[in-house]
Image 1 (cartoon, rainbow, N blue to C red):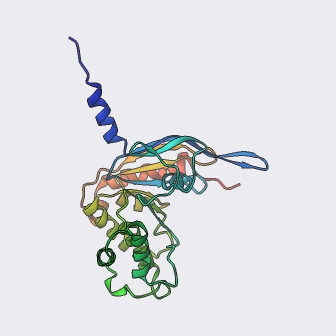
Image 2: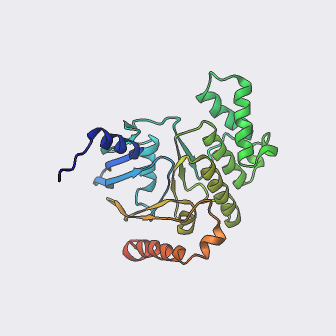
Image 3: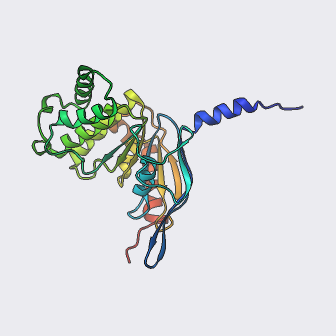
Length: 277
């Protein structure tokens, strides 16, 4: 019996699957003592609309990896591709939210978001841009804080503004570099809940760095676990199959949650325990 294959169909399926490709990526920095390899041969494909968390010990190259996705850094070898195009510089289709908020302190919450919208969509009518800003402030529950400057906002409110600003230009990928790391536990959980709700409604592709296993389990479809640096690689990728919409209380009652949690803990603190010199 002969099996026939259609190369056009195969090519189409591959193209759909390859939304974001990290292809044999290595990053090497020259130092006075010789080359320092941060990442060595990293391969990862992210599906469109997927939520991926990257975890690992300090120095494993998590931020370096996401900087190459955002275009702030370039691989020493290998390629990072979005929709088949090599990423060579930052672009509005890839928005980043940092831990330190990165808001202009002399501008209000509204003005910080408007600045991004106006920069990316200068051709839009002013009222249309105002409506976009208001919509995204409402999305993160900050309509009443629109005219407040960052100094008048709590840490959680500042991060809400940062997330609203990133989403306001409708990027293809949202890149989150430990966005909740500086927040207290209660605010952190509140923002995790909001982020899950926003993602479930809009299904934007998200890549996020976190050190928090429980945060990764609550948010992600897949958890990418890095080996220790130098010359870090992807050590293991863990699928998180809890259905959406997710509720924290229901997940924590599921035995599978603790199976996955123990698997991640064993990877980070057993197989790849981080020992300081």
